[in-house]
Image 1 (spheres, rainbow, N blue to C red):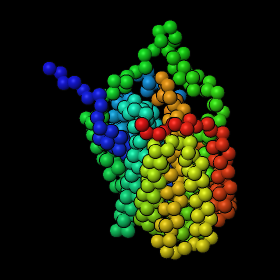
Image 2 (cartoon, helix red, strand yellow; image 1 turned 60 degrees about the vertical axis):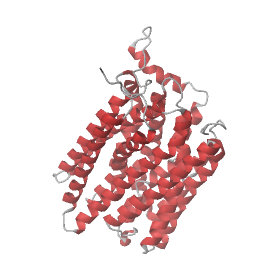
Image 3 (cartoon, rainbow, N blue to C red; image 1 turned 180 degrees about the vertical axis):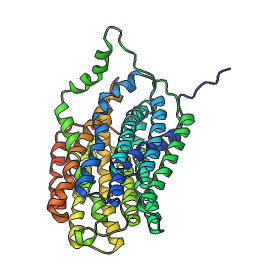
Image 4 (spheres, one colour; image 1 turned 180 degrees about the horizontal axis):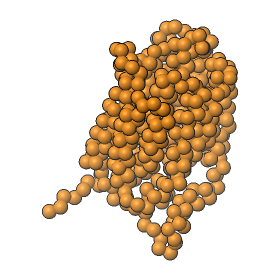
Amino acid sequence: MKREKPSTRNPWAWVPSLYLAEGAPYVMAMTVSVILYKRLGVSNTEIALYTSWLYLPWVIKPLWSPLVDLFRTKRFWIVAMQLLVGASFACVALTIPAPGFVRYTLAFFWIMAFSSATHDIAADGFYMLGLKEHQQAAFIGVRTIFYRIAMIAAKGILVVLAGNLEQRGFGVQTAWSATFFLLAAIMLALCLYHLFVLPYPAADRAVVRDRSRSSAAEFLRGFVIFFRRKDIVAIIAFFLFYRFAEAQLVKIVAPFLLDPRTKGGLGLTTAEVGVVYGTVGAVALMLGGLLGGWVISRHGLKRWLWIMVFAMHLPDAIFIWLSRAMPESLLVINLAVALEQFGYGFGFTAYSLVMIMVSAGEYKTVHYAIATGIMALGMMIPAMVSGWLQEQMGYPLFFLWILISTVPGFIVTALIKVDPAFGKGE
């Protein structure tokens, strides 16, 4: 007798691990790659430009997101893409020691990024299919936490490992190759775990296509429904500009921490950056996300929206002080970075809930992919020029510019309309 596949499982069995697998590739592409190329001697301008192009798969993923809805299940896409991401990490590890490493590693980062973006489409859709609305609100903090734990593992623990290998006499290339091989093994283990543990929700099936419409028309239908919303201009503006300042800041924090003091940086070692930015900062960001999810589940998004906007943007001023005071105490640097990251984690919770809010309906997977694609575009374009701006301005003036760049985030928040009941638990 054939054993029936479980349609539900305790969310704690799969939500945390799913967002570990979603967070690690993104963090490696967006943040750890910056540290890698900095340690390999690439300039800030080139680092910001090259690694910002890795946002592109997340920008254009709505173009193929209907395929995830129309073919196979979200569960299938999750497992398959985790396998491909793990293989891509192994290939990055193999090409780091090669001549022309920038070209080859970027090529495999691109494969990994496209696989990860596809995985995100499926995982976020699976999250909404596998949980009721009140569970989605309650677990938004949990998924944020474990996404941030992936950050700790990737840009914290793994960066510290690479730094310790460097200090033990291994070459920079050897140290980072070993680190990427370890990450590949972890990713493949998560793939195997999800193959057996993910539930089989009844709603997780290919969208039934209307036979009266052509395949092309069905493919475009999800896009048309999204962009015909009355408030679409305000939504697009919010997704593009809410993180305008953070998009620039994120590419420069690690170079600022690593650059010697003679160049205006804080002169930290690779391992110290792994602790300050990748561990302490990531834990603070995670705690901010947890608190944000909890308060929204109790009182709704509308009540906390503006508090979260201020919490996210005002702490950016800390980097102005760091670049001018140049503190030598690791404790002081840790506290400063932790405060900024806590505020960012708390404020980003509102952004995540707005994306879920506008993704309701039959094509919720496609709509969520469109939302995250617009978000990625809002991160990609400012980030591309951030390295050049920093090298032209120097760190103190650049961080002052970052504070000025928070203004659009306040403006677009005023345009968003939120149902007072949205996000509250039952």
